[in-house]
Length: 321
Image 1: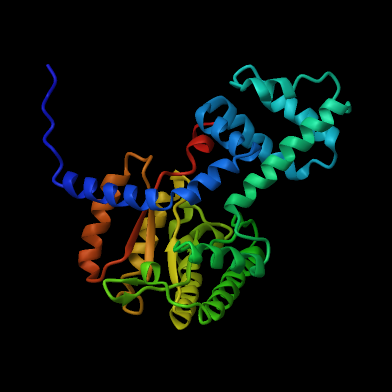
Image 2: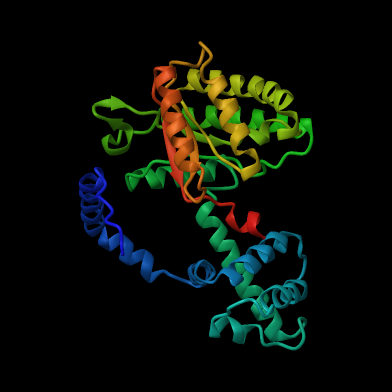
């Protein structure tokens, strides 16, 4: 017997929003058609990886070591070692590309060049730029397409206090430069306003572990004290600049500690009224529904709303591997 599941009270609203999104997509068909027509190796590589778990794990391992490889034969050899594994479901085209006997051969070098170029191009789809000037160009292009943004800095895996301090300084500088540029932007109502009220047009995302090198659940109190001191500095400067701050989630071992630190910090009188802040939850975790309900009750206690970003979750492969 199949039990009857009552319709969700949000079903009608969900379908209405979906229709609006579908309508907007159809209006932008020429843009998406152009993107589809430009699909190259990098797109195919990503599509294959997402559809094949074995390929995805090995490809990400290969990408992780790629920056340390200094020659095409090295790249070709690693490519064969990682993607030649029997657990990897390879498309015919890629399988044929790996069919070379010697990494130093011409076919090996062609394979290394093709895949390296595809990986680099793929990376640039997700990295706004290597300099603030490149980032601003990317942001201004997005704004022309009526898309907003949140920027985070790579290299958040700090292992020394000097790195943690440098990371905070880089964020303070990033917010200042973005805010200075934002003063020159013309208003785009669709992304800069909500119900007639202005929204912060500069938004950054941070990870708590980047602000303290010894962030560890085994030293929850010490971690909370050190991280909170640095986050206070970040939030004060963000308020001066009119920037919004989102707190990203990380590996599962840090989740409860991250939420506990933020809930205590954002109840402090100085930050309690701030509504330009956000917390991220990862949809792939079974805990997320409970965490969301808990955040709602906490927000009622706080007396002021904040943004909750629901993301798929990026740590599944790492945590299961």
